Image (cartoon, rainbow, N blue to C red; front, side, top):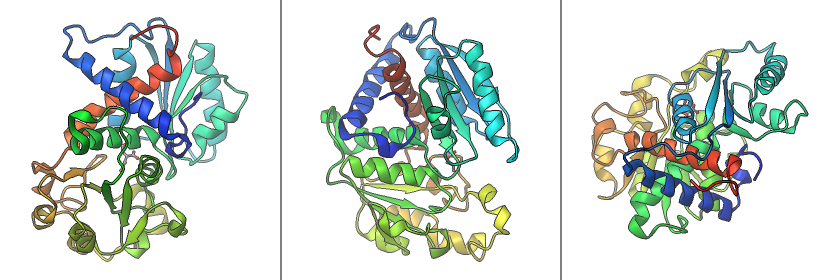
Length: 319
Ligand code: NCD
């Protein structure tokens, strides 16, 4: 594994190696001195061409916990300068010593383009490209599911036999695409739920089931329910019109207390954040015991530590 571009590129063994390594990273959290020397003296570029807080901070925290030096670049590129600014920025940071590149970009395919180019010869980690992929999000979701759904005996295990329901703005969601890919590799059954206007064309070919009825999907008793953010910023260009009104969306596709109570007792509720409280999830439902949203954020650091460690330090120095 040289890059991490898409959750769909991971074999079962690679996915399990990352998840198990993340468990080791999690254990280091209990130490008094949490910093590990694994990437001491190594320089990592974090290039964000699209707004983000938690993902950027999470990668930064992960790199720092491994003692790496960071070159942080953030800018919102205009669509015209996309290709050039990506190339120029990467080459500039490479010239300053960057040995790995974490990239978020509004254009689908940006991370692949960087990895396939001759601009840099270094590992590229996709931190979200357009509506396409966000592999570390899928890994942190799977890590969180494994902890809750498999318990203490989870090392080396996949999610066979588990049922995950993903609800909401599938059309614009790189989180949904990445999760469908990874959960399929991990043997879980996935059901996507959305209004027809927010289902992507060709979704029938994905490795999952599809329904337009949230209550029906909940009645199947899934072990995990993932609510997606309604991505307003990706809707404005087309003038909206994906659903009649926020109230109507919430009524048909939002998670409220009645729906969360209808879930199995030990089911978990996930959300990649940031949440639109009152839209895809009610304010009360966002804070129920079944919600693992805060834990997802914490697990994101361990999973990103594992990815950085495996891509950059593997075989060189023990953590
Ligand atoms: C997700 C993203 O950026 O794709 N959020 C995240 O990584 N924290 C999901 C979203 O923005 O809705």
